[in-house]
Amino acid sequence: MKHFGKMIVGACTVLTLTCTPAQLLAQSLSPSTQWEWNKGTIVIKSPERPAGQESVIGLTVPKMNVVRVGFVGLGMRGPGAVERFTHIAGTKIVALCDYEKERAEKCQKYLQKACLPEAAVYSGAEGYKALCEREDIDLVYIAADWDHHFPIAKYAMEHGKNVAIEVPSAMNLEQCWELINLSETTRKHCMILENCCYDWFEMNTLNMAQQGVFGEVLRAQGAYIHNLDDFWPYYWKNGKEDKLGWRLRYNKENRGDVYATHGLGPVAQALDIHRGDRMTTLVAMDTKSVHGKALVEKATGEPCDEFRNGDHTTTLIRTENGKVIEIQHNVMNPQPYNRLYQLTGTKGFANKYPVEGYAVDADQMKASGVQPKVDNLSSHSFLPEKEMEALVNKYQHPILKKYGEMAKEVGGHGGMDFIMDSRMVYCLQNGLPLDMDVYDLAEWCALAELGAISMDNGCAAVAFPDFTRGHWNDVKGFHHAFATPEDEAAAELAAETATLSLKAQGMKEWLAKSKKAEVSKEEAEARVKQLSDQLEKTQKKANGAESKELKDAVKQAEKMLKQAQKMLK
Image 1: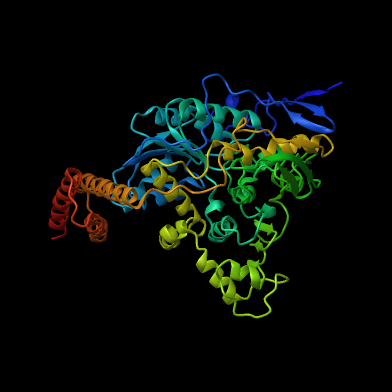
Image 2: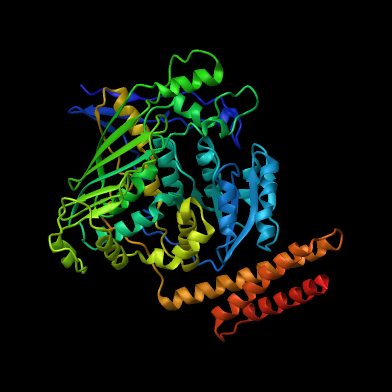
């Protein structure tokens, strides 16, 4: 006789960034999840695709000369995203939103520094709704707290917006399925902002794996091991009575790998998940909670009898093609930062933490197009420095070649945030599929609930849902999309021209305000430099080409520069 389970959890009672308490349902066990035992394995009941919906694998939207963005959530991560976008040509920051108005207004400084027009500001529990209802926004960039990722994304997509959501983008299976249905229904992008897919080692290693340097990759590891003791006090709290902050409370109330995507995302791409392979079975185990309980007791001064999440969680996953993935999560115990990122192949090995290196023997190095300088090169140890450098140089990812140097200047977790944002904008401007789709989002975020179900049932095996609903094998191999050189050049010129117009508009706004207030010479010179540099960059990109948009932008920029230079005199 089959046993059916239904996981039910009450609404969260904590007001966080943008919603009222009654709306919060973002717990790692969905109210609607149903499952059954089948020969010792828990099988999750997956909803059928509603009539009229189609897969969004390879989804594209019409090209955008200018990507108009609204940012929601401007606490810890959001301000950095706003600043990064001021460095990406062909983007317009239309609106800024946070529960606390002051935090949204503070982000205007990044636009001012870049000589860009001010953005509209929204605040309060439902400020994001007015932002999403605007007709002049293409993309809603969501960096709120975890509880509010889903409701903001849902409202944005219901109002015709593409969305990019910080991690974890969905907190349970119910939210995963709803975002999938929204993307399939609206034909809008729903991208997970997994920045670790764009770190240097991960990107170069992915390119090597795709080119066969490691042979067939059989096993992969990833993790998020990061002692957050220095960070717990700074997570947003709802008033003086809130002693824990949203992130510690979430770990207290929920079990499972609640932050799996940093570890899982890069290895899922290397293993072609839902591009020729799929995750089929999961088993999770955790340690007891020691540090988590101690943190709660220290913060509240009261005993903590229950802390759902163990200090360390380990999840094992098997794929349809017989590969194995191991993912770990630990934000509690003292140990060095570690995302593991390890690939084991039939002909080679890659490892990022704690020792970064590759293990490939001499024959495989030669087969990969690199002539080793060591005669007895063996895969028993990591490559010597010169051999590793030669391998990396040969297989440097083209995305790093395009954005790497600027990313190091702009920053954002060493530059990978900037590369992630730039790639998303590139794909939107060129009408290409995004690097990560809504099925990636669901697969990577599902570990929280699937792991909790496994551990709550004696660490039983759980069958992994097929979020593509039968389309996981349609595409053979994960690949980044690129425009033709001609289309890419045209999109870049349109983007630079649009940014020139925006900076001219920003200068115009500033000149109008500066008549009413004293302005420092340094501020005026900085704005003149911003506009002058953009004018030079745009004209260089045009290389003699002409268009009405370009002529108008140049004319307006030159006019504003003359007015600003008069002020300097």
